[in-house]
Each structure stands twice: as C-alpha cells, then as structure tokens.
Length: 124
Image 1 (tube, one colour):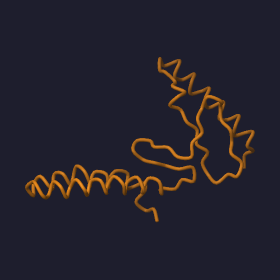
Image 2 (cartoon, helix red, strand yellow; image 1 turned 90 degrees about the horizontal axis):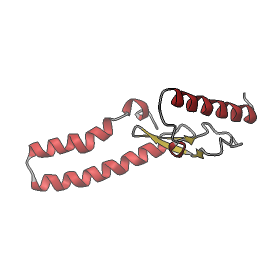
Image 3 (cartoon, one colour; image 1 turned 135 degrees about the vertical axis):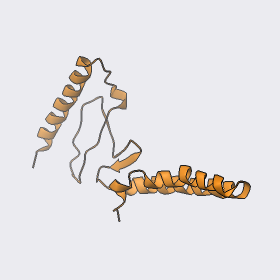
Image 4 (cartoon, helix red, strand yellow; image 1 turned 120 degrees about the vertical axis):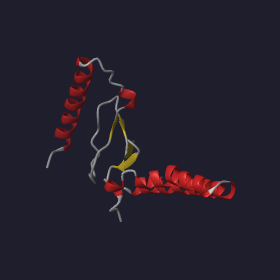
C-alpha cells in the first residue's frame, strides 16, 4: 500500500536511472517516445514527470495493454486485423490457386492469430 506521493517519487527516480543508464551506454533517451501508464484501478491518478505523456493504453511489440491489465483493446485490434485479412483472402480465393490461398492464409490470418496467444488467449 504505497501512497501516491511515494509512487510519484519512485517514478522520478526510475526515470532518472533510465536516463543515466542511457547516457553511460551511449544511448539516446527519447522523451517524446516515453510514456507513463498507471496500472490498476486507482481512483487517484498519479502524476508523472512533466515531459512524460500519461496514457491509458500502450502498444508494445504488437500487443496492446490497458491500464486495467485487460486485453479488450488488443482483442478488438486483432478482430479488426483479422477482418481485413478475411477480405483479402476472399479476393485471393477468387483469383488464385489453392496453394496461393493457403500461403496467404498463413501470412495474413494465422500469423496474427497466433502472435501472443499465450498471453491473451485465456481472456474472456
């Protein structure tokens, strides 16, 4: 049970440590690409460092996660991708061989469906 003030202090310390690490290892810390997401169902939003954007969801390595650790946004995104793939597959089926259709299915549909299923597959 940490107080909001303690969490804010820890956010500043963590940001400072990340910046120091980048500086020591000849890396660039890009504040415009850095975001803060408060996880959980806190009523009080914890403010972050002034140059860091607050967000309720974030896409990282193709997976969309929200602040409540729900996969709803990711599943919605995936449904949209699969819908587009289905449209393309219908077009391919009408103009190509079965082999081309199978290849297109694996590339456009199955690859999206399988990616990260270990993480989000048990979602209700």
